[in-house]
Length: 307
Length: 287
Image (cartoon, rainbow over all chains, first blue to last red; front, side):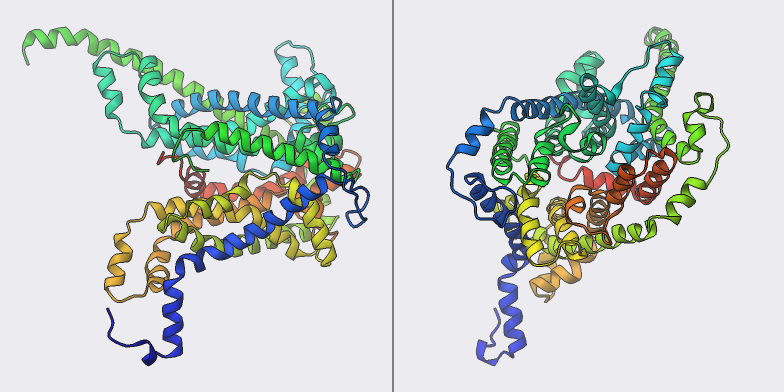
């Protein structure tokens, strides 16, 4: 294009050309290098630790013990498998209810009404508020003696419940809090999806005499599927890794009977309470593979699904 | 229209408003119930923060009580609480700023040049459990003597914020017509000049979205600060959590601390709900 030869350019111009020609990588490099270092090194390290008997101090020399840690973990029916099961129940139990309730709320708020903006702001609050504060708040509300939850039950004549204070009711109560916190998020994502839909397919179905339910099930829902998928992906990634709520309510080990111990809490305890880095690393690798597997299942054969 | 036709539709016209009325009354009730379900617990937290501990224990004073400010003055007076507010703010501010600086150009490149695999690397950070990074990070940062400083908190938060910024900005740049750049190239700008002088100013809403969400995520983060912060760099969530562990449960003060911690986020949500929603739904509505 330009007739000036390279020799005639000043150093600054030459530099500018060089930068412009490589902007694709210059722009992307800092983010990629930063991420690669902060992820790459820890994963390599975790893989290495998982085949050693590293304990106590990370600096102490560790011996190679092969896949013993993995074997120990996978045969551990006291802590690992219950924790894995709890992770699954917590994540997918809460997610299922959040999806259904979120869809109902999104449909409820879909068509314009007065104060729509304020209702949206109101339901924004639970999941943008600091999770530690939310966890504390629910600890007070679910306190068996002074909590508002039992007072409320008392008003409608139901006996007080133990909530967080009994192993059997702890996980369901925690799931309830998660549902309270994140149903609005799902609702807002689905609402945005609904709002972006064109009215025509719905109108066409109405003219063909489809009932409201039929129009939702056969017209709206299929059109909304990509949005539902994004909501499910985002929420399941975060729910699998829930930490704040469980830790603030039940502390290390998930309570005296490990009743709230998910894989995340289990690994945290192994690492920072028992310094059992070998076992912790093996659990982490397995946990990470599980998350990847779930993500793969969710996006499987669905092209264009971005995280 | 024939008279016959209008006769036929007349009764329908009369019935419809009645049905609609019933429906909108039902819908209004349901909306009020939904709002109450999400606001009453928060209101309970705020009310408890203005109660004495005696009133918190008194079932007859659920809603009627004499508000007091003692909890707030107790929290703000002791425990260097304002220092923790500053820590949270400083860490969130720096990690958000640097993440945008790194994330926005990266998102532009990844969106324009279809760098799917590179984007996947950055977004992988969203999937990995933070716990898995803490032990190696702690080891390295402790050896560097960084643990307990602001730098390590900022870096660890950037690890969460960069994927968020890239994710939001990618979908923002995806929706910008490529003709914008082509036109400015024709006008004699270099590609980088076009990015800096034409695209960036137009991306301000996207950058605001990414920035606001990043700030909130950093402000709310608990796990990284729990392990990596020192006595003087504790962020609010950790400080409040510690407060619970050593104080014999002083619910009034705890709720006041929780309210102070949540207040900035509520203010942001009130004024920037548009941005929060668009950040949350980035990529979702395009399918």
